[in-house]
Length: 200
Figure 1 (cartoon, rainbow, N blue to C red):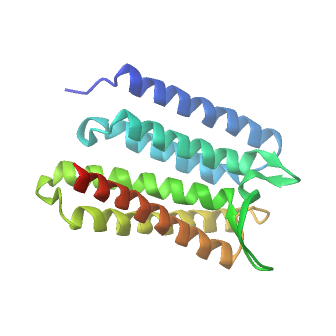
Figure 2: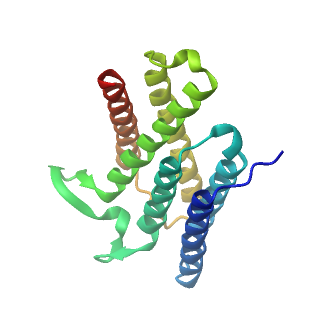
Figure 3: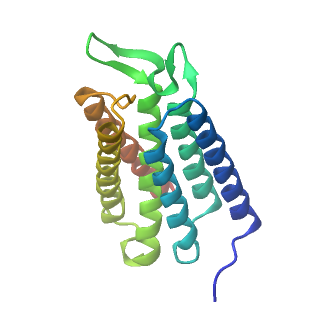
């Protein structure tokens, strides 16, 4: 029997679809065709989460966290700030050289997004393989898997560069920083879960 989404889950879905449509129309209006790759990716992820609702048993907090990540991502490429896009916004000058700047909005989004990804993967692992609960495996595997998905995200961004030459994806250093912040976000998420487990 097909599971009917709860009102809370429907609310997340409507919110997510609303900003995807809004940003799609905005990208078309400004002639930013890089959005095609990202919109297709976003819709694929929305569909994946939707069809797996019953078996995955995502919490409402997870769904909202994933949706907010999507919104941060779309806003990063679509909201203009200081003659560029939000993704290039410099937040805190933790490290500042001629070649790189830390901390930028882009880096925060990567850390947040793949921290959420690790959280979801931990949930799925312990749900379907309950014998892993409370083990180091349940903390290490989600970090490694999240980093792998982060690498897949970089492949998608590379595809955008090949399809649309004028993008805001960045070069080699940007890619390396993205991977580092993906890993940092995943490690932080699993550290929090591990500490909460020990405190329980």
